[in-house]
Image 1 (cartoon, rainbow, N blue to C red):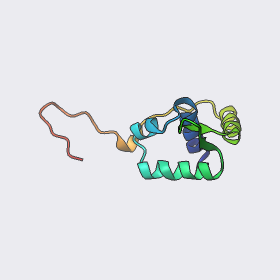
Image 2 (spheres, rainbow, N blue to C red; image 1 turned 60 degrees about the vertical axis):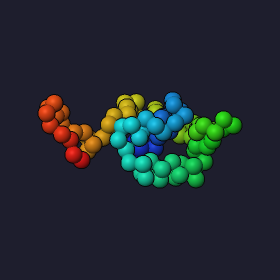
Image 3 (cartoon, helix red, strand yellow; image 1 turned 135 degrees about the horizontal axis):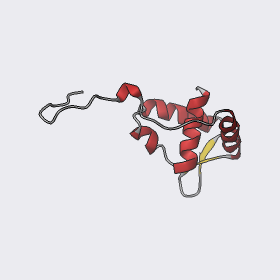
Image 4 (cartoon, helix red, strand yellow; image 1 turned 180 degrees about the horizontal axis):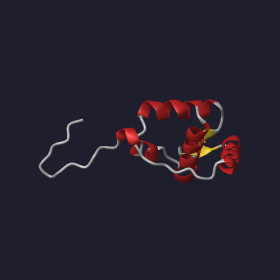
Length: 94
């Protein structure tokens, strides 16, 4: 997993305790789940008492290290999933 992807997931969980923003941004469900499982195996994220995802001490430390290296991360929709605007009389078929 790329460092930017790792930071994206850790930051999303830190801020939202959820992965919904990643799904909304257009990332594939299978890929997100694969990345999350990898982070769970590395003991960087876990579930708390309220069954919400949270960062462990290892995950928080990793988040801080990556944050120092790269300060300009944002969650943006993938360009692959963007569609051009359509007119009122057109129909969108994926």
